[in-house]
Length: 316
Ligand code: ADP
Ligand code: MG
Image (tube, rainbow, N blue to C red; front, side, top):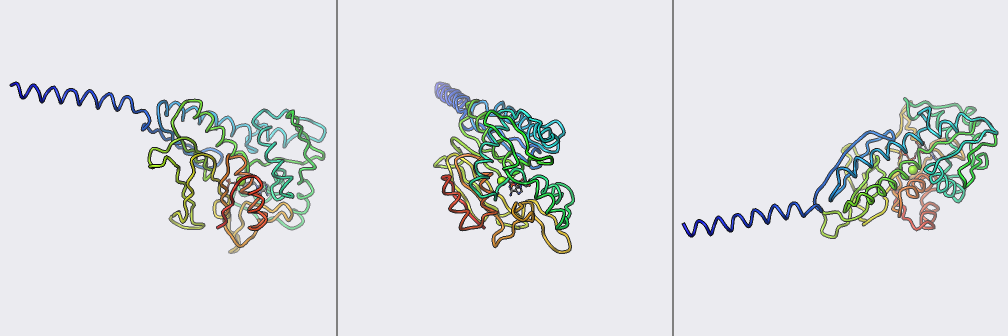
């Protein structure tokens, strides 16, 4: 009787300790959610106390940024700008202003390899639909509308155009910015660590409870691998890993592949000896713009360009 009581006592203490441990170990709690946004699959994974509420708040913020920057949704600020005539001005909100500040800076320094005014040419190719190969004269005509000198952008957020028909395409920058804003929301909610994957645009911060050193391991996909296998891994504590490539979005016509990264100097998909560029940088917006810029610039020039911004370019 006495012995059984002793055992029962120990059992009770252990049960209470275990319950306390799991209650006091919010560190390991994980919440993950996936939604289709920015024309891609977006997954947010957060660890720690309040992870679920944090992830829900992230998706609200992502939806907000998507609504503002999507050129295909009629009411977005970008669409209103694209419909505007020369002489009209549009007030870019804070998000759009921040995106454009970096996009224009990268655009100017890359000698036009990255250019958010590429929209009229991108539309000709209809990558978001079935794809179409435009004629040379169509491309030449639309290239007349491309160039940052045709965009009026003041730091105050005032946006205008120097000629009718100038349009913005933030497809190469908005997801990077959205990844950064997602991290802000997660930090403000006090989660212990998180990784945000917006269709291959990765941002992360804090502790990864699944690794002994707390680092995040980001797999780099082998280009055109049917199984999506990884052939490289980047390990980071925080920051962004963004890949731009020919295998993510392309169409085939008459046995030829046409992918969605356009060389603004020619109006045609940029063809090089590699299939993808991965940028490792301190934030997602910079990494996203650099990925497209470095893809168009080429290995040698692009690698040096990324370094100028404290980033690394990995060509595959
Ligand atoms: P995604 O992550 O969606 O694959 P990327 O970040 O690789 O997109 O950027 C490609 C997108 O950016 C294209 O779909 C197009 O909308 C736009 N784009 C294509 N070429 C350029 C360019 N030279 N400069 C800026 N934006 C571009
Ligand atoms: Mg990009």
